[in-house]
Length: 67
Image 1 (cartoon, rainbow, N blue to C red):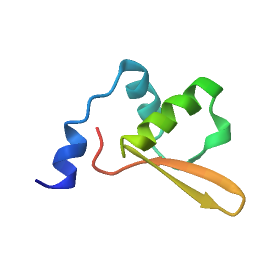
Image 2: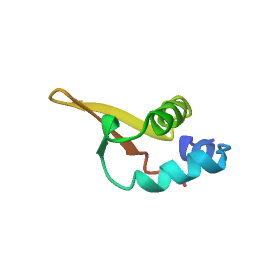
Image 3: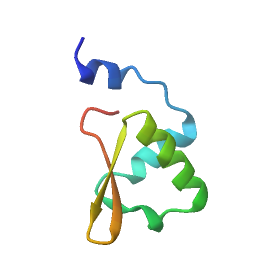
Image 4: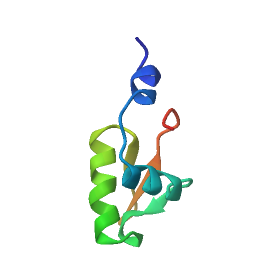
């Protein structure tokens, strides 16, 4: 089984789906509300979102295989 197959079948809540729509491009994590940041952390644990550092800014971006 490929990793993209696993990501496509990952369950997401309605809140997570709404946050995923906001993550169409790399965005600073601090630019989101506290609630959205908690949801993004859950998406990172599910491997649907990646976090990376650009200088001193933490950016988050939706993974390519996610829906």
